[in-house]
Length: 98
Image 1 (cartoon, one colour):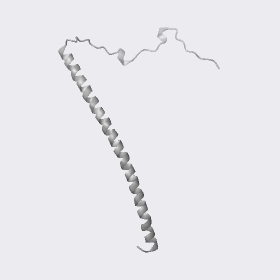
Image 2: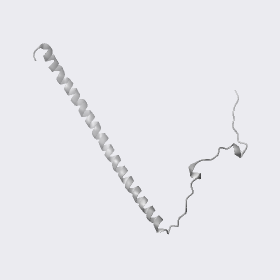
Image 3: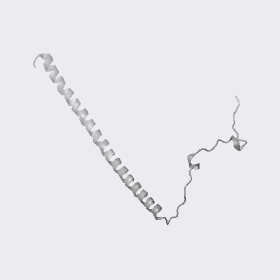
Image 4: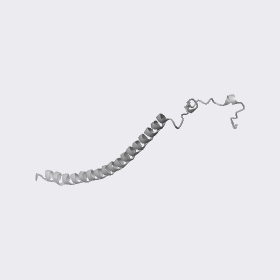
């Protein structure tokens, strides 16, 4: 068995970089540009609002999961009670007392 080792001898052996970030060109705006500053402020406010909504959804989701677990336990207990009530009723039917 031979050890295969890949070595790059020439630059042309390297794969071509086709990542998106190398294709995007951004414009530099002056920090004194009121329109840009207003847009930055608006976007930061949107980020804060969305973060607050996300945090609220996480809290609500945790509450729903807790309630769901409690309801599942309650359903399980009620099903067990129903099964216990069915047995005596079926026994009475079998005996002919009902």
